[in-house]
Amino acid sequence: MKYARKTILLVAFLLFTGCVAVDRLKEPSVSLSDLRMLDGTVFEQRMLIVLRLGNPNNVDLAIDGLTFNLEVNGEELAEGYSKDAVTIPRLGQVVVRVIATTTLLDMVRQAIALGRTTELTYRMTGDVYLKGGFGRSVGYEKKGTLNLIPNSGGRYQPAPGIE
Image 1: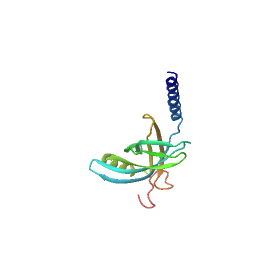
Image 2: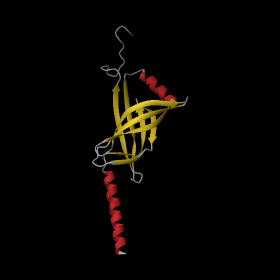
Image 3: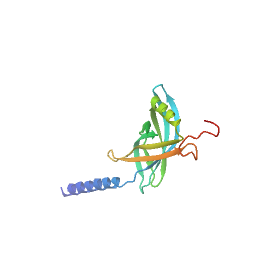
Image 4: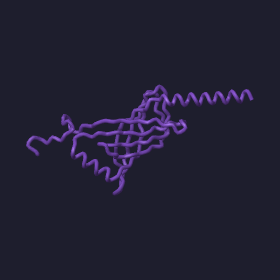
């Protein structure tokens, strides 16, 4: 009985300290590495999105999936999921492929908006699911602006003599 009680206390301690350690993890860095159109129908297009995941923690991050949302110019463009299990080495990086979907309406909306500006603002958000973390996830977010025409300040500037 005494042995069983010590075992239960040890298991409870290990579970508690494991949960505390997961709460102290820094969120991984996420960047878009590649984007390729795959196939589509009239209503839906599929893209291969390659994400680079960086681990700022001093321990390996074993993950068994992630979610991905991409907004461009304040509008949702695509979402995707990956169930691939990978380990991001401590203070290292890995590349993950995600199949994302978008709609024809979202693509048309983005094309129209692109005609009015020379800047693309983007926001990537999602969750990375930790392997063995009892459903625990670490969120991520990345924002940025891409200036499509340098030195334009985000406004369309026609060439001299063209109006």
